[in-house]
Amino acid sequence: MSKNACDLLISNGQIVTMDAAGAIFTPGAVAITDSRIVDAGADDELRRKYDAGQTIDAAGAIVHPGFIDAHNHIVHTTCRGVFGNIHDVDASTIKFADWKADVTEHDEADAAAMAAVEMLRSGFTMFIEPGTLFATDAAAGAVERVGMRALFAPPYIWDRRETLAAMPGLESPRLMARAPVDRDRALGLLDAELHRNQDPDALVRGFVFVYGVGTASPELLQAAHACARANNVPLHLHAGYAPGEGEIYRSITGVSQIVHLHELGVLDQNTVIVHANLLDDDEEAAIQASGCQIVWCPISFFSLGIARTAGFRMAARHRRGVPVSLGVDGAFDCTPAELMLAAHLAARVGDDPVSPSDLLEMQTLNAAAAAGLQAELGSLEPGKRADIVIRSPRAAGAYPANNPVHLLALTMGTGSVDTVLVNGEVVLRDGRSTRVDELEISRAVTASVAARAQRLGVNLDSR
Image 1 (cartoon, helix red, strand yellow):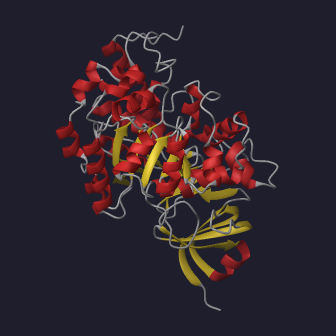
Image 2 (cartoon, one colour; image 1 turned 90 degrees about the horizontal axis):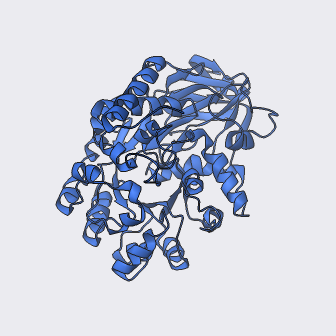
């Protein structure tokens, strides 16, 4: 019997496919040709079926689709150790908004490279950056150089500022000077990143992100929705983030934020609401009726100090069929590897547990849908992109090996990843980048943060 040819066969692994049947093959294999998966199944079957140009022996380790961070302000990772609490405007000599506004092109490139390497080492192959990069070309170049996949949007699409009074750390004269709260500016930028989608194989693509939390007029919201639909990309916006935001919005419009979005016709299955921490029952009904998606950021949920008072609704939404995915928001005090654990703990605090399999779905399939790339990513199935993670069989938290879904969701964090493929290319091997000098990137980003602190008069003395 003649064999089919494939470029690469990942063999002898615990293959967590995330397909509709929830298939796990132990031992299993994945066959890849060019940038796509051609088969996934039992190891002995695929070995008989394929003649591979190259084979990677997973040595019994877990193999899974690359995780997707559905909401990551990637440059904010460099705030580690700078702000104890970005919302406490009296705790620092500057506001968080000033730190964001001061960023240079080199700062953004260095931060993007560092965060991308960190995500690969945490099992992530893609992230969605929600419109807080100024030098998008420089950041895209850094992400592509590392070999990561991403979605980018234009910076700070907003045209009103009343609700920012509820979040004073997020606004400052310096930030507003760099990203003016202006309708003409916002409308002119809506499609600024969509040129990236002309290449179907591009690692960094574009989408539409309105800053949200009440900072967009009805005219801007409807224009953004029309732009997103005309270009077949998702529309994302922040809403229901912090206490006070909703009350201010209701005082302006006479109706709650999500209900207003529904009335304006901007909610549908390709609209993604980010956070949704503080929604009333009418807003929950509007989400259900519209079919829109939610990206929930459990680490931010905890850091805002609202874990008990806000009410936990993620599990209930998931049971109702609302697509919920997970985002780190800003990796100030964590890495994206802690996302599913944080969601698990929030669910426990809310006395409404979420299963490990549901958490994995949120970090793969649902996150791919939030990116508008569910046909390309999120599972190990024929025809999908070969964005694949092989964990280390020697990793802490990898045993007992009887339940790989539980391990992936809750115990295997940064440091457990051995090999990562993006588009069929090995971009991480033996836990290290194959494309960039990680030490050089670490030194560059440390110098970048020190220079920004000096420009802004921030004391970085750890004491």
